[in-house]
Image (cartoon, rainbow, N blue to C red; front, side, top):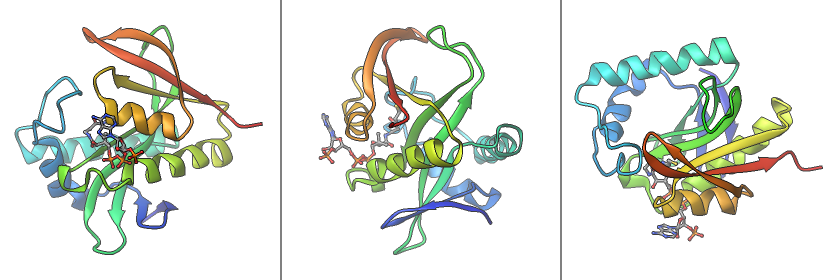
Length: 174
Ligand SMILES: CC(C)(COP(=O)(O)OP(=O)(O)OC[C@H]1O[C@@H](n2cnc3c(N)ncnc32)[C@H](O)[C@@H]1OP(=O)(O)O)[C@@H](O)C(=O)NCCC(=O)NCCS
C-alpha cells in the first residue's frame, strides 16, 4: 500500500477497495454534501466505484485524491489532495485542484489544513507544479478559510453548475 505523505497526526495513502465503508459513511451524509451540489450517495456500490475511479487516476494521471487515516486510531477520515481536472472549468483545463472531504466526526480538528499543506508540498516539490487551484462555494466558509490559510488567494467568482464559487490559486513559491 503506497503512502504518499505523513503529517503529525495523519497518514495520506492511496485509496483502497477496503475504504468503501468509510467512503460510504462520509458520502451518504447530506451535511457533507451541503456545498457540493447536495448529491449524497445511496449505495455502497457507488463508493466502491468511486474508489476504483480514483485508483485509475493514480495510474493515468500520476495523482488523485488520497485516503486520510488517523495515526492514533487507524480510522478512515476521508480524502484530501490533488486531482488533475481534465474538463473545462472557468475557462481552464488540465489544472491541479486541491480538495478535501471528511466524515463529519472529524471536522473542526484542523485536519483539512494539515492535509492541504502536505498536498501543496507534494504538488510543488514532487510533481513540480507551477500552480495549484482551489474551488469552493462562496458560502463554504470553512473550506475557503482553509484554502486561504495554506496560501491560496481568491482570484475570481464564477458560476459552477449554477452556484457561485471562488476560483482560488497558489503559485509555486520562488
Ligand atoms: C471543509 C472541510 C474539509 C473542513 O475540514 P476541517 O478539518 O474541519 O477543517 P480545519 O479544521 O482544518 O479548518 C477549518 C477552519 O475553518 C474555520 N471555520 C469553520 N467554520 C467556519 C465558518 N462558518 N466561517 C469561517 N470559518 C470557519 C475553523 O475555525 C478553522 O479555522 P482555524 O483553524 O483558523 O480556526 C470539512 O468541513 C468537510 O469535509 N466538509 C464537507 C466537504 C466539503 O465541503 N469540502 C470542500 C469542498 S470545496
